[in-house]
Length: 467
Image (tube, rainbow, N blue to C red):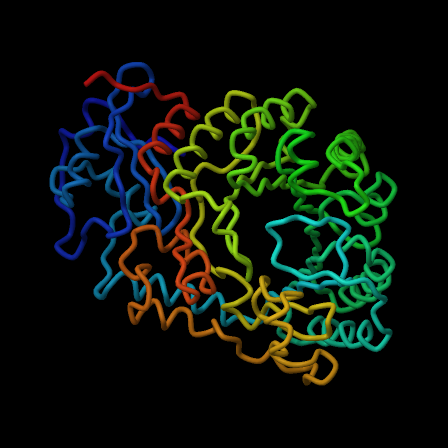
């Protein structure tokens, strides 16, 4: 967050905005005032077209909240234009936002492949919608995946390629990851194409040696790992099929990685899936993680409510508004503990997810290609065959259109409430699949914006102003 000029003289030398200018529809102003530098009264302004939050003099904030630009100082007006809080769109702003998203999703210069190297997971989480089976993947499947990714790397239009290892539990397919990564990184090097890689894993099969190999040979530099509470809660919420416990082992390996110089550029996102069974233990979990040493700038905490993933979680799912209030409490606790998190998005959403862009492909270990990450290994989706077989689809063509590639047109047509929501530029609609299934996937910050204004103000050294 930045503070725009907030001195007493800035409102004395005034010029009027141009007749075409107006306050953006995608601007929200805090209900409360805060003290900047101990005495200057300011309001928080959030411009979601750019994901920018600034502090402005209180009177300017009042004017913006009323939708008027008259009487705002020229220097401040320039800053508001820069973050697109002040706009001159000759047509609806939604069209501008959607056009930006369409352009980003239509580009095939930055390709992403989400690969499942195995059908099995060594955990049996009750909220998981996938069905896991043992078995070795065929060599023909591996070669088909390789051909597809190598063809993408070889396209003249390709600038970067991102490979994300996904699951089931991808580390069960560790040999396949090594084999395919060797082919991909060599081809990217030969073609001069940028190559990055990440992994979504439960973390139970990681070791320090494997982390080093994955970084040096496979270019894996980001891990998303799930921990659902302090040790006793996590081990019950995410049970290993073997009956053994996993929390202590996962955290020990991660702490070793944070101390290893060869992994200095590797980051970790620690996700917590929260439902009625573990919500009351999140605070203890955060205290535990801080005590263990996870207040590190390479570790980010992501708290997320459990929701349906092709399965019925209605018995354990938390109400979104209730969850949003609890999440602010947990974020305030994280701030006090020095843990890193994101209170509000700081950038607009360009490519919402794999489901809305042909530049992203998901290769299930079943042999099918999908456009939505919540379809692989989900029985009813696998039975439908996805977008086709990886082995038979033309390798040099973009993936076939999926069920959600019309998402931007659907928003423009008013299919969902997104078309009139001031969070749409930073949210992008959250999840097309959830909307089409009749659910409302709005992010928790939609229900707790003022509380997050208070939190961001506190994080930036502002204090509540007296009424």
